[in-house]
Image 1: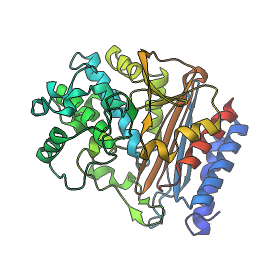
Image 2 (image 1 turned 180 degrees about the horizontal axis):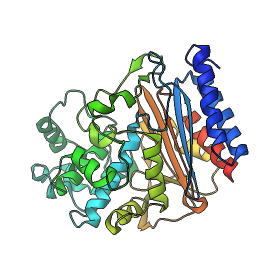
Image 3 (image 1 turned 45 degrees about the vertical axis):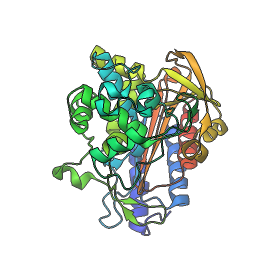
Length: 382
């Protein structure tokens, strides 16, 4: 295997995999992870990949390849990766944390926190619509000409919906971004401070950031585009709220375990995690919770691939509203994908099986391969 073009890197990959096997007591699963990871890395020329598993509260880490082709630094469980839209799950948790703290209600209209939007079409939606991509046809990205908060507010004040709120799902970074802006404002904190102080610190995630500190830059992996061009995130308006978090496999597994109920947290944060998993809409076999996407378990790989297909991100899909919202249930596969130009990530967990997985790579490789890899590994645990 030569995903980074050198025999040395190949030997490092095998050595790292062997260390992971030696440190655990599940050789069958370990061999599955090693074979599957090596196959995916070969197939997509991925420089580095970190995989983290939790099984009934027991953690396992598998690290492959390098964080940079230039430096040849090995991937570790503390290597920082861009997690892309998995950042949205933290935005959702910040919103439910604000609700559990009494700072906002998900039933509120945006103008309660952003008075300049009063009377606009945007003010006819609720915060739930923002967190479920059902606002009425918001775009996938913030328009390129918008470069300031003032321009952003003017854009939303003039925005015209394509659909009635709650009738269709159109995946949107601006929608989630506005949810994050409102949640942070309700807590009287900038979004970066809100995420780091209210979530990352309390969840025991010391290696997670919106802006990577200078002292942590050596841990920050170099990303590579689909064409193998080096790339890192160039954040735009609402990046911190929608796709700007950098984290490690160790920290992200901690977040997954917190969602599974393994972590000892204060009651407010624990309630916030639970509240992100209420199901509000159905889109085919997928139940749209607050950012998290859920599937009845057991679930086939084909169902997961359909739910994570490009048309779900780039096209509008009609929804069925769940009234009342569906309370969190254990028999679900809960997942979220995340991508930036140079990174590809995936996180999933199954409460009924007390299992979860995190995949972090410094290459934007196909979501189908991420979902297939995770499904193969978690199926082996069954």
